[in-house]
Amino acid sequence: MRRGRIEEVLRKRWSGLALVVEEVKNPHNISAILRTADAAGVQNIFIVDPLGEGLAVNETISTGAEKWLTIRTYYSAKLCFNDLRDMGYRIAATALRDDAVSIYDYDFTRRVAIVLGNEKNGVRSSTIKMSDDIIKIPMRGMVQSLNVSVSAGIILFEAIRQRTASGVEDPLSEEEIKNLIERLK
Ligand code: SAM
Image 1 (cartoon, rainbow, N blue to C red):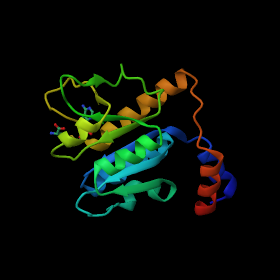
Image 2: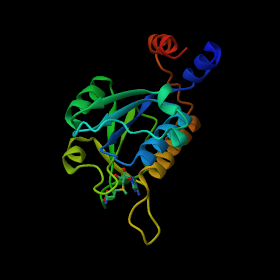
Image 3: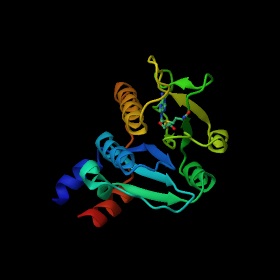
Image 4: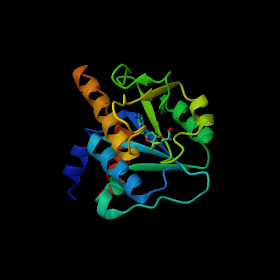
């Protein structure tokens, strides 16, 4: 891909929006999450993979989005959160709990990492305890939860809506852009 096009895309990425994906197992889901992150302008993806299973991506679904992203993998949420806090992120775990804040009332204009959880068990309770905030997409139906990749899309695009409406300027650093261009060109 042309260097100019890569730079143009990187300059639209959000520095202060990150995704943490904890133990999402289904390749279709992880692939759809990565594709959505790229489309939403989220560069930094943090994978929590305690069993060391690796990132199983289905390229038909991801359409190769993983190539353009910065993906870091951790064996524990604790180590991942240490890095996130060093990078200045607030951490918002998703969970369908009564005390969770609706994403429509949550302030995504701040520097925030959104934690998505396992298809069956959700975000681990120990991970939720380490997070700063708990957020949810309000549900109106008979089923209890959404698919995790659908949730990623809804949350990220609500975050972008808020940031755009507030005129948030939040580009990647020049150094990060330079390094990414070197890797991607
Ligand atoms: N039984 C699990 C639970 O109670 O968390 C359901 C997990 S859900 C199928 C998988 C992931 O999708 C969750 O960990 C969360 O990241 C995301 N998710 C699903 N529905 C959501 C909602 N309404 N609000 C926020 N995140 C949601």
